[in-house]
Length: 610
Image (cartoon, rainbow, N blue to C red):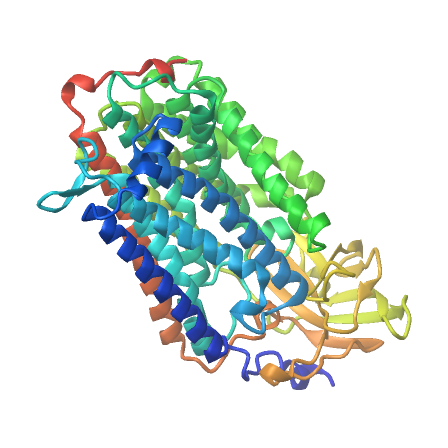
């Protein structure tokens, strides 16, 4: 089987989209029952027909040195952060190692994600339901005598948005097939809702501090740790968009990775340094490293799933800390803009040493011009947004509304423009790869070495992003389910494997080429997949196959028959909801800042001084 005949099977569709209806009905029933019980409990508390809820909340408030409507939600939120992060990383690793799930209840990682997202929503609702009196000066009026803290409303909104993504994911799969990528629209709903909820949590804690007033007890180490962990959580929450690069299976161009690192680092670390003072940026990065490292250790070596690396953000933290010792720190917006510039240049340069040392795909020198064009404007503007968030948390007056809102809008537009550019790629026409395989395994577990000749030979530059072989979804735990081999260049268009690759069982093995805007692939071996009507693409001793779009191989479960217009509409709806969530967080931060009494405004709070 050669040429177009075998490639016709790559996008075949079948019955692999969506969960079994009994699982969907079962999950919905459980959610309705639990939700009804919690609503009834909230009603009894609000009507003061029970007192034990308030007693437990008061106890938590005394221990946390914050009002009960802050203490309980923050405790739940901390559990959420750990539970959902563990489930998410484990889920991605299982998909990489084993492929798609037979159903949402057949994947153990999904339980951690569901519980985590549900706790996030419950945490926000708890902040809304618990207070009998008006919770601080910034509260939102719900009824005549019921007020809710801004941070609680935002946390509940983020939780609901993330939680909604779970059932919608099944709907999406039924319409479009299973898009086996982190960047699927419904996947981004779950990731975005959970990630941005860290901002709501810090706003809620700030409201609680203001509600306690000047006579608040001195903050202990536990509360300070929670605050530092909050900023570490922002680093983690904004960095999970990079997870495909962390596992070594990026399905999009490499220029995204530096931009995503710079954006997350600029926002989170600038805000941390402004609120928590000296060393806060470094400490937030270290806490993020510790939490991500612990989860990676559990998922990889302990549970036998593929190992993932992650950005350290230490270079970004160092440049933010150094800049904070200059007079620029006294001008917060300028500090944020300058920090973003340094994070996206010096910080990325420092991060590149780590990436080059441990990642499957180091950053080639050819990546830097376009990567900087994308990362620098995004990081500068997200740094300014981080500075404004820090100003809210340190009682500093934000710039005039047109300026502050304009900076947020510009940041969103910069991210959108960079994303649109990063999504552009080319598939070369009339280009082929002639692959000669030599046996290196056993009949029961076939492994091969490969000699690859790309035609035309000048298709790839001397410094491509990668020319590699990827094998994934090979099964767990024996093989860890993933194989990555960066091929050795022998001459123009001539490459050779450095270790035997799997071409047996359930493996999907392909030759990948990424050079600038070229992003393309050739299948080497693809296991048969009756559920989607795809036949096996065999690994013959020698074959010549055309280069095709990677997505037709990596996401062969997607249905090519679904109209592109429907896909576009679905993506635009998710985009609109995401912008509403960002707009809500912006509104909430602005409401807190505008509601502060003018007497509490200071140029710079003592905790934020260099």
